[in-house]
Length: 543
Image 1 (cartoon, rainbow, N blue to C red):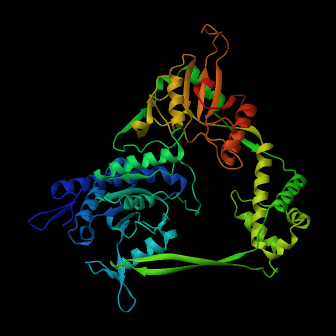
Image 2 (cartoon, rainbow, N blue to C red):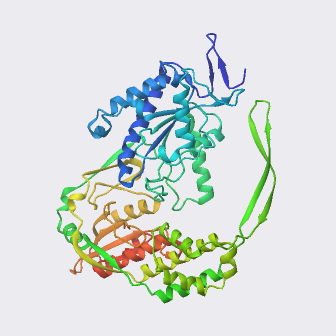
Image 3 (tube, helix red, strand yellow):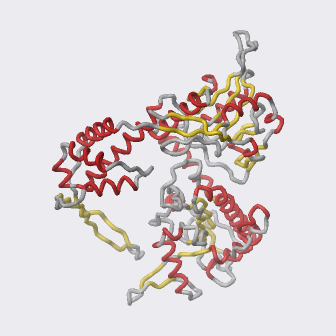
């Protein structure tokens, strides 16, 4: 008997943090119901972005899922069928719970080398199909054509399974090991992939919900401490929120009907299109210079050596022992022009240059021998420099013009849901609460509320975007500010209409390149085409 176990006369053994009986069933049901509901909500939100949502359940015992009267399977079916009857989840009404589930548990090999699944139901073929779907055919798993989206596992997926789009993790067990918790959480921290197989880098979309039991409290506290130690507290990610404490930000119709909002909206609502001119000679010269300055090594093969050992518990482990590296040269018969053209069409955004321009780059480069010795890497470097320089030229020379279309006020949602911990009460905004995404935004809202010269402000919704060569840009805030003199009295001048972007720094060089480039395009859109002031600020004092 271990010190953290209690043995009862009826044979039941409970470890620290475990439950048994009616309370356990109730806890399971609550966790399962919340996970399914979170899944429904998340899928509705992410479908416009072509992202399929997966939910992963870690269960306490295999028999609690695979047996005919298995408690977890019964509770899942019950909760799924109940939730799909609600009006807001009507899209799931015709879906059967059995069609969206798949399970993968531990496996062993018999004497013949065939995979034998540890499944008391004996449905080996179904298990084999589930294994292939979950572990091997990830592309099909992430497709909307495949109905499976709820995955059940005991421990097999805790490590070694690298699949994106897990947005919910439900832990139907008590885990004392911090390492096991980290492995479980790790299944849901991969960047999402859309239907085109492309990674999605939007922090607002890549949010993991953990439906945890009580034993995870200490883990979350420790995780937050480590994050702050690694990245600091300023402008770091918000603390994990309690998803059960949800709130609603309600649209204040009285604010929308004010002359201030009407004037603001009439200034900023216009849609635009952009046009640019590319200087071909400048592009060629800059690409050639960058390619010639890049060190392109010979291709290399790395052979890593290791030893597989088996411990006393019959568990496999590997030990690294060393590696060898071999450089080699290619034959030199690769069609470098076709390699570059192919890569250009598969970059983001896809690009196409005339063959004459590409041939000029190839002819001018001094890295002729490298082009022959390692043509794939040479083509990769050329495409990277073409993409970099074209985007910079597009951004630098971009010009916006109105197109006669506009965003409509009726596009605002009547209510917005979020966690209460991420909402700030607002008297000067068009919603009675403002949902913030970072500590900088939270402080910005609180400070705007204290300024009497701020007549109105709005956090611009996701549908309000500005087209740019590197993707749509969604600015942060639109503000109406009343001009005041040194005594705090209105000067009588026209109100100031501003669009602002809140960042931890106003130095665009410190931001990600794409972020700084989108901000530059935002300035051109608002200042040049709409004649609305635009600036990047770190606090409300800079407005």
